[in-house]
Length: 318
Image (cartoon, rainbow, N blue to C red; front, side, top):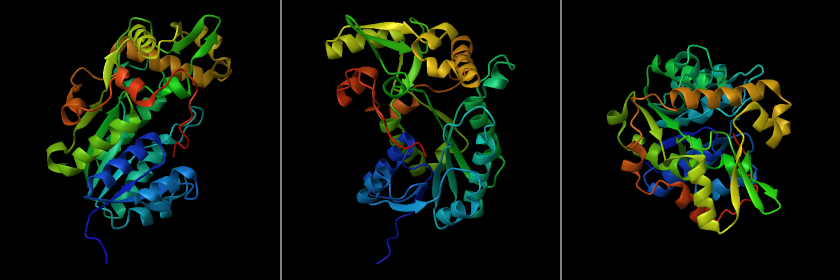
């Protein structure tokens, strides 16, 4: 017997954001999920299959338009995201536009896209952060398409500090290298738990959120406060280490410093955030916690994960 529940297609379903959307949609009991992935046999994809998702091979990479159209066919809504790419010859903008075009061509009625601010426009070209700007340009393209659309905008990820900027051992404890000045407060979020509830809320009230850009924020917090909270929760000795200047990044992560263009992008993101704020001033930074009060603060994230400073890999990104 065929279910009459609407289908939501999730691009990049094994990424942090994608997994969160799949889990929330299936957990609601109101939706079927078609999970797009490059590796249907992967551990992450099979985990989604066991939850009840339909797994479809449709990589987030150029040249897969036909697979995307087939995957979107029959879906009433789609969550779209673009994976992290190197700033050297990035194809993110073209990829995101073609992905959205494929969804519209297949009859998807509502697109929810994971966007960011246009750093190039806001800073007048002073800061280089194509990872942000390309997502903003994709959002502008989606606004021109004949489809309902809403944009979620995630804060800095708590998980980055576990995966990409992992703590480093010292004689008397550990150092937490953080890519912001020690006393600068910025928005952070856990993409694994915050994305899904927000997208489910949007899909449940499409007219209310038509055309909106909605930030997902767990807590606005400084690196100093993050380190102090980490000490208190774990009982471990820890201190802040500068990973926001060229010298600091090179000292903490020489492999990043070896890629000049990637280094410029990290510094551009940091410079933009410090000088202009991560989000435009008109954004509603309370929205995600209003619709989902269980959105995790940094302390709640530490308690929920039990993290004590080890490096963590979260698996596939697309």
